[in-house]
Amino acid sequence: MHARADVAAEQAAENTPSWPEEIFAILQRFDVRQVPYVPDAGHSQLIERVLGSSTMRGIPLTTEEEGVALLAGAWAGGQRGVLLMQSSGVGNCINMLSLTQVFRFPFLTLVTMRGEWGEFNPWQVPMGSSTQAVFELSGIKVLRASQPGEVGEVMEAAASQAYNACTPTAVLLSQRLIGTKVFVK
Amino acid sequence: MSKANLLDRRAVVKSLLADRNGAIAVGGLGASTYDIAAAGDHDRNFYLWGAMGGAVMIGLGIALAQPKLPVVVITGDGEMLMGMGSLATVGLQKPANLTIVVLDNESYGETGGQVSHTAATADLVGVAKACGISDTRAVTTMAEVEAFAPSLQDVAGGPRFASVKIDAANLERVLSSRDGTFIVNRIRGSLGFQPI
Image 1 (cartoon, chains in turn cyan, brown):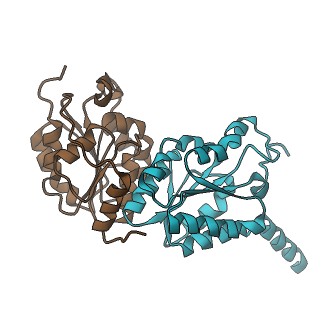
Image 2 (spheres, rainbow over the protein chains, first blue to last red; image 1 turned 90 degrees about the horizontal axis):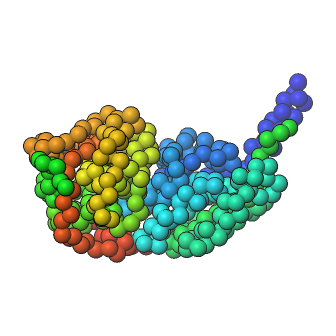
Image 3 (cartoon, rainbow over the protein chains, first blue to last red; image 1 turned 120 degrees about the horizontal axis):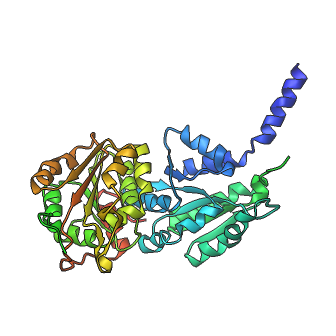
């Protein structure tokens, strides 16, 4: 029984990666208070932590651009935030990303990538392929994490430059990191 | 082609902000920003010159960050139509200190007066109510505006939504600052936040 329970616990730990916990801890340390999001499977663990937090407010959106405007308002009101979305949502944000240049506010977004690394769904590929370029054309600095071991240092750098230097920053969390979505077993 | 007996937008906004105290006022892209400027420049005026569809979300971000301060978003029907989903987001968050006022002239006044969806079919008060904002109203008289204005100060009774039918007259622009960092940092300064 014990041996089987240990195996089950080990499997559960393998299925629950530690990097979302690292992201959560860094966001806490930087005193992030508003966390607007459009759900994505790759963000699910972090979203659960945010919704269970007493200091952060998780704010579900109907479309990602709402989150850009929300974070501008949060900053005007004295709070920091972070926008969680999937690569397909980045295209929805383009005009609203103007606010990052107009206000020069500490914009940070964490983007789970689709449309790469063994993608099954062709509809994800066009936006996933242009995500980084869209950000860069919009004046947003892009950092990427592809391995679990590098998430912490990438997040630390991103949060530092966004919140300390008001440098709008996007962190792309690679599909290689979050795992390719399985449609057919 | 203004309809009879519709309200003057400048008079409406002036009345809403006359006793604003510490309220933060967000003006949507276009004439609403000019209306807020016309009522008097203020270090807590958040003028928008772009970001169409974003006014309510900016107001929500401020309202959640400053729950003890009244926050009022004053915007137009076209701007509100573009950000209609944000009413669902507000309905879920229920910020008690947020008021949304739509100045509805049923047209896109800034771009030549093309008719908007509210002229015929779209009912923004119905949308707000259906999104979970329980305090909603359609306003058609100045007496109603004046009766509504004090409720903006009630930071425990929101969110509230009002659609005010206004005259479609294109008034002379009253230009506010359009420097985003100045506008935001002035608001932050008034709240006691230092520059980075």
